[in-house]
Amino acid sequence: MEILKMILDFFLHIDKNLALVTAQYGTMTYLILFLVIFMETGLVVTPFLPGDSLLFAAGALAAMGSFDFWILYPLMLVAAIVGDTVNYWIGDKFEKSVFERGSKIFKKEYLEQAEEFYRKYGGRAIVFARFVPIVRTFAPFVAGISKMHYGDFIKYNMVGGFAWFGNLPVVKENFHYLVLGIIVVSLVPIFVEVRKRRKSVIK
Image (tube, rainbow, N blue to C red; front, top):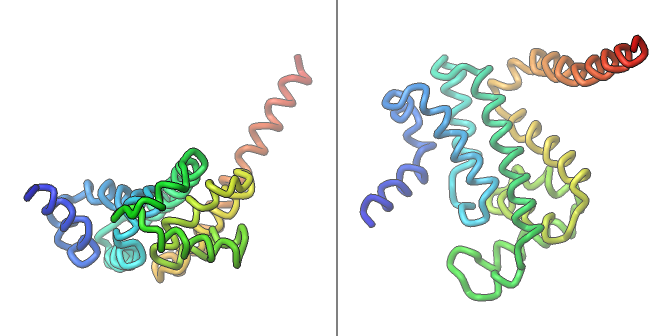
């Protein structure tokens, strides 16, 4: 029980102790950050983990050279997008009734807050929720319960992920590079498809 408490305390306060964690664990910190962001966005039972504050702490350290921005940014972005996606599918397969049992983990007020947010903004709630603690964790879950079309969800999910991280000063400073990278990545499938068609014509 004591070990579990220490582990929980470590994750709860990692945003405040990130510099020390980085000094102690080195490159393993990237994995730790990935796990925290993934769990905060992807697991319904961990809405209490630091999200915004951890991102700003990591961004500040990246600006000082403690992290490689080009490793940190894609890794955190993937963690956030994959986390929301997992949360969506949990909601899609889950029974809403679990929130009716007075559980300390599955708090009904959290679900109601996210549902109200979803009713107010529709699909855009997936984007806006990125900036609202607690709601950020439950919005994709509610989208899954509501059987939101997955194609629509993933689009909002990706936009929300880019918007959430785009708020960091270190991201703004490198934004022109990010735009170029996104364009390049977007063009790759087109070139692959064109190449396939050329090969089929030749045959």
